[in-house]
Image (cartoon, rainbow, N blue to C red; front, side):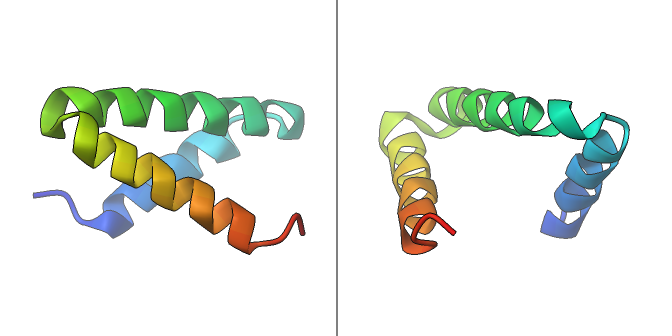
Length: 64
């Protein structure tokens, strides 16, 4: 089983290989693909909950 730290290292490495202007687009695409993967693996409800929690975290930051 993959540890969360392993996933973080993969994402950090992928970001490090991209120029700064490309990083936001990469993360947006990663989130979209991850959500689609969750639909396939865990179903609509689990994917929806994960996306909802992500959106809630963004709103909680208050646009900072």
